[in-house]
Image (cartoon, rainbow, N blue to C red; front, side):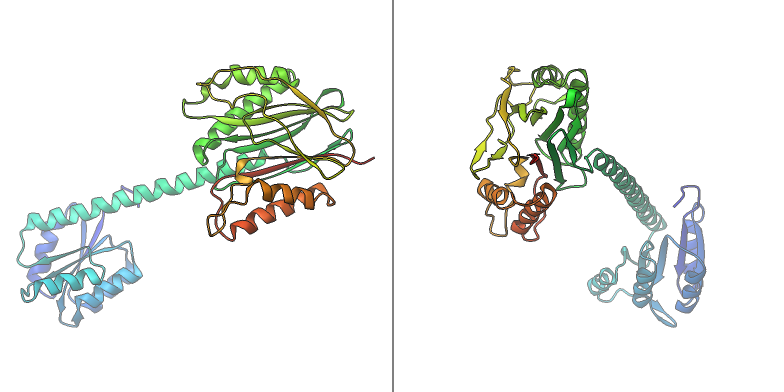
Length: 379
């Protein structure tokens, strides 16, 4: 409601003197319309919207309780104050008034200042409620725009080049998440991938994820070598608050099948070899946190042969719980990786996600879940 419009009150009472008293008490500043019967009140309610209705319980053509219920059903934003001159069974009348959805209940006679204060308070609460609802709508709109923007940063298509296939999936537990992954072409036939998890989730985690992604993107543009990227990340994480931190795996895929990478406190990626054996890539340095020692870790190097795969993932991909609070665990993820190795990378990722959500059995995820598959394509 616009604050420039005078708030409107409907006063329903079969006593002419009471109607006039109500009008003199409330107008101005409020616009007051008067009705002597339930029927007249219903007609006025068809034509206009009112912020507050003052309704006598005992009307010549019906009871005010019923009219109160009708008003609340047809116009929930209209508050009703019930009034009566009958002093018998006041507790019962108060209970019935609340049961019918009335804002308050007044016994005649009452002081004008009491009525005025009551109506003022009722309308003030309405303004506060509308302000909160407006803020909530704006916040929801902003969150949706932020969600769409964050989703636009996730690679939509697999990256296939120079004998590599890189593809990922990300599922946030909230509208905004703290996970991200990227896959990009690099110089001289190399490909770049990264996967990261900000501790926590929601808006705050999404903000830090965006800042870290921007820092990572800037670093790899200057020099995609893992050692150089790691150095820039360690020197640029001052934007993290003390309790904030992130884990990250960054890899450079070379045309000859080598992978050079560093792992900053992230869950260890799994490699499935041609003999169906699984290896875990080791962690090379501490997670990213401004309070921890910023030690430059080693850059590791492995080689993948045609048909071999690497699966990188965030902890939300295996810490998912079922209805009995049992974790799917790394064993579930390892089994899924082995049992999907004969399928295309995209189908394998979809199957892994299906198993994650299948284990959750309808429960919402408690954390973001991201999986990233790297395959050395068969010749």
